[in-house]
Image (tube, rainbow, N blue to C red; front, side, top):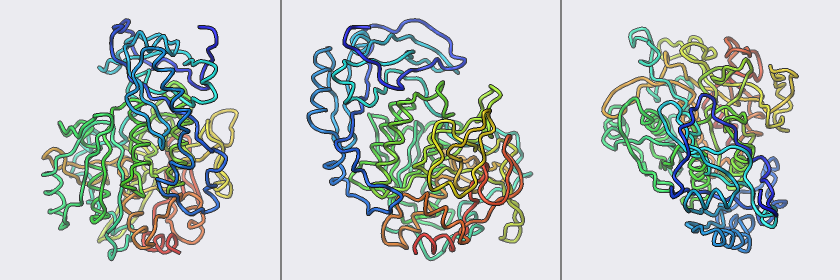
Length: 514
């Protein structure tokens, strides 16, 4: 390591399990990285539990964005190493640098290799990232050196589960909204919902056809490219299924809301930039829905990434934005085959609402039974190994982790909704009518419900978690008490499968309004 260099805390990157080394990458391959710097006045960020009034984006940038001197010091570092500053953003506290791989590797004291996993080739590095000692107090994270696919969409197509449509009872989002007693006199007018998508796309004609068949006008949907990633629809079995599921579920529940779809590459850097772009966009969405994630552990996420993503969600809350995140579709292991239980990130961030899944049985427009989604996949959920138990969750009697030594931690999920593909959602993707389930459907379902809440309130609900746990004691939820997701079983009160339960729509709107 060159003299005067120090490692960035939590920047160590582990190899992706199952990835095959291909060889070195070309020295002249362009590499782009995002450097995240410290807040100007971190100690003064509003305490979210105290119900502070949301800040405007302009006020936030002025009070809590990056100091111009810090941004310039990073730019000077880039110039000294032959790197180009492509973007500098005070509100997001980011500087985007670009340059040939050899120069970038030298600047951050890393080495690059090309790997392949599941048919995808990517640039990877291992070990920590280093910066000059004088930059260490300024730089919070360096993201983008590694371009491996960062997250997976949490949706499941009915056909992929080997289920016959005749053996299932699928629903339109409007039918789910009626079963959950969402208020019919609200339509999300005046509200904006941000959707985060890591690839895929939508076709406007599909949306027009779908909403016309529901008897609704299609909501206004705007594609927002992040770092040049476009709306790029292809085939029904691609990430298009995720994108369209999110739009059609949220749009059916709140058809007069405006939907902004932030498209980014499926990398650590792309995911982060999509989130922060939505948080600090002057178009000012008050709701965000994320249906992508990966197990929170170190072989999938670096500590620096979890830290700055969580900071972004704190900033969202300070700006009056509520964030809903799918909890995963692979049960309490989250699809990791190491014999331990894992929760999904970013659903495990204490500054988002984690969304778990159920299965519905209904007749004559009413729910006959509802239990944990545990077949044809299973809802994610459990206890975080990296985030401590939040103050607002202490009264919920959150389980100890099923992993020895059975620590306390942030419980996931917080809320639930229909997710089993056998009781999934009828959607239209790339000209094809299909049925999709997964906790991916639950996050936009709740995002649509909150658009109704915010319309009724006349202002954003903002950081929801403390309020949701209070609303649970006043009848805002139907508890799910049967079924399990592997290591955890449903029970009365909060549980690590369905959280507080699924919404009692009109009652919850009243509680969140009052």
